[in-house]
Image 1 (cartoon, rainbow, N blue to C red):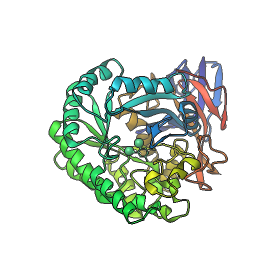
Image 2 (image 1 turned 90 degrees about the horizontal axis):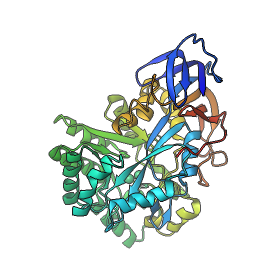
Image 3 (image 1 turned 30 degrees about the vertical axis):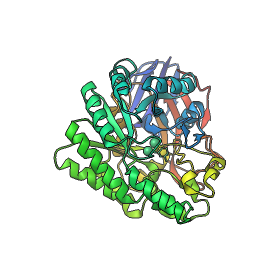
Image 4 (image 1 turned 180 degrees about the vertical axis):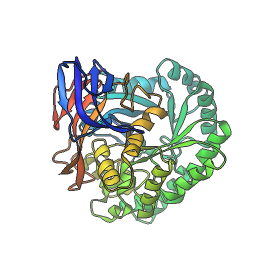
Length: 447
Ligand code: DUC
Ligand code: ZN
Ligand code: ZN
């Protein structure tokens, strides 16, 4: 199958030019002008932007968590991602404390394999580091292609590991050539504050926010950077939300250390005032939303190159699931739905409002995730030889976000009624049209 995308304005992390893209099979064959070929399919991209497929390296699909499962399964989640211009996601496998990493991998594959309509991969969350798990790291990297290991410094008693385990894991991951990523908040301090608020009868969603103050994230981010520096292990902080945490990373760079930083779209554009609303549970996620000054820090951090990735931490729960915590904030399943909204919101709030450039947009939403997680240049850019994962985007179309029209399997939107500029029109996944004019055209199961 050959496809020709004509007259689009191609944007990569470094370039901005008009040309035609010739696709053969799953890959980009050539980019240029005036091709003398009769392609089987032609797409006119006049007046449109042409981006590489988005990569969201932080999603939780069909995940057992806080006594329930996230409401998007692998099919609905990857389909919604495609509608929003994200062609690849990286999901998290959670080891059960006391069990092997392999058993967790088998369990997650049982839910995911054969069910995704977009490309996907995994991070492995190590929640119990011991001699057995240590012996599994090499095989996961070499045989399973999983080289990114997640750690939780919070969720005490369920997912959290202590510093002893963290250092041991970092040393092993460094030895085997992997990367450690981290949910960096101080679990002991959060645990104390949650218990204190509950004992005082402070049970509304606002106390979710007040149980995770900025210092819990700043302290843990600095500690993580220190341990990574000591062990020499490459580190990646997921969902960084605030000024204090980014300054901890900034300090680490002063000793010539590189720590990769991801933020998520919601931390750039939503703030903690939402927790005072009656339906504040909708925005209960960890870390919580922060303040205006933190949003400014994060936008600046992107432009300073301190924040390399904008992801989602997509972890949707239906309103009924959120109601599990109607009398107690600590029982509200933590998570925010955004897998479908990330690319359009980042364009509208970032590029359209003049906060980031078009190149930066592609860099943080597509290229850097591919580079950091070992997929570049096969993914994350538009170049001859790369996978033909392509988004054709109308930069001028205005539309509204709503649970009535989104494709995520969740019955509310964190952005209900938001009017935004810029819309995903056509999405190609490895050369095949997956989405066209917001209508699914025979989404193929590709795994
Ligand atoms: N935070 C969330 O809000 N949900 C899933 C896991 C996490 O760390
Ligand atoms: Zn997390
Ligand atoms: Zn997460």
